[in-house]
Amino acid sequence: MAKKKTKEEIEVNTLNYTALSWCMLNGYKIYPKPMPACKGRGECNQYKIVIERAGKKRIGEKVYSYIECQNKIWKIYDTLYSKQKNKTH
Image (cartoon, rainbow, N blue to C red):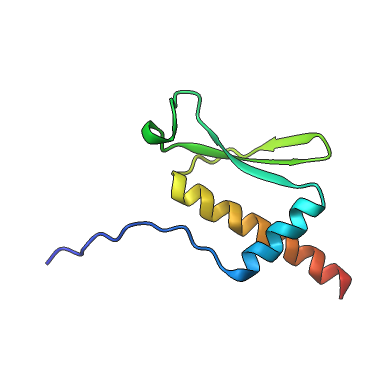
């Protein structure tokens, strides 16, 4: 019997918003960048992740689907926040 395919979902929790707030207050901007061939989200499902801080922009090499990209962005916010939190303790 074939497995039923489940729909991908964006995973968000309360800690994500705390991490997002800290990152924004500290100058981080993290967002998806559509691949050049894309003509809008409806027709695009290939994104790279951009991280900006203090005028410096880094674009990741890996290509994600929209949902994967959003989940990875939340994980990056959490990672940056956790590193800072660990330094202060």
